[in-house]
Length: 346
Image (tube, rainbow, N blue to C red; front, side, top):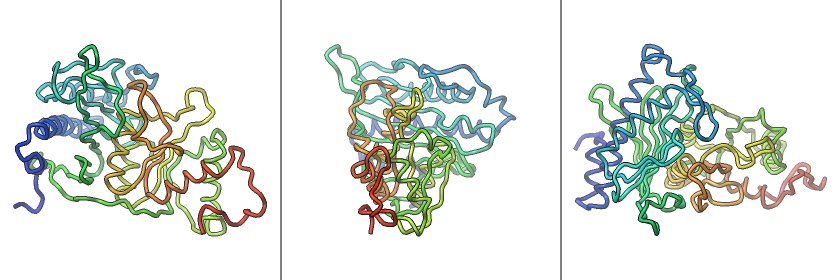
């Protein structure tokens, strides 16, 4: 056996001639093919045209870049050959029908982090695969909790192109070999460190946060003298896949809370095709994903473009933030007794 098995061979072994599993593997292979094409476009940069040019707004009001639309079209084209009933995409207001009666449906952010295209920062494709469940009108029921996912992953386009994938039994990394055009398994059953002193948040919005997040970040910034008793580093890339990849590599926590700005009460990340697949990957690697008060994958969506607050990463740090939500009032008022220590962590 090769030192680095191909994605195809890994999926064949996993499916083991099961029809249900083979449908999942076929879908993943088709998505991988589209992502290889997207990777080639990203690598060419301006040689491939004005990929970062604005093309209007999507249905949810976010600016669309040229490559957003190209990536969306490539994924739609690829999954025509997959056993997929329909596609839900950030770039489409409504579900896109593929094959009526097919056993699966796909939800995707075709190009996460597209605001970074022109700055040569890592961007990616996020996807979630769920079973097709018929509703009373014999249509695919799209609003399923993340716990129903049968597979999820993302492809990150950076110094290396890599697919991070879970089939519900661990989180794997497959790196694209540019010589052969194949994804190869380079890390199996990865684990997120349970403890961390690194957090990622857009601190320019600090005046807009609720008291729970303000209290947590303030205590991180107090370093060794604060209640956490440790010096923290802060990161912010503004690319969800890049943030997740760093956390999978060395631990950390990512926070995109809701805030008081108009349209930001539930944060800005979409539950169905951003938060749920990332949560699935992180949990399968031993981490956690929460809104601060609820496990992300247990949320019952009410809309395909619904947004939720998202906090994910190292298990113990996510649990710590949840304690801030449980134990502190929204105004960050604490008795002076806890000025230099906290009941949250010894």
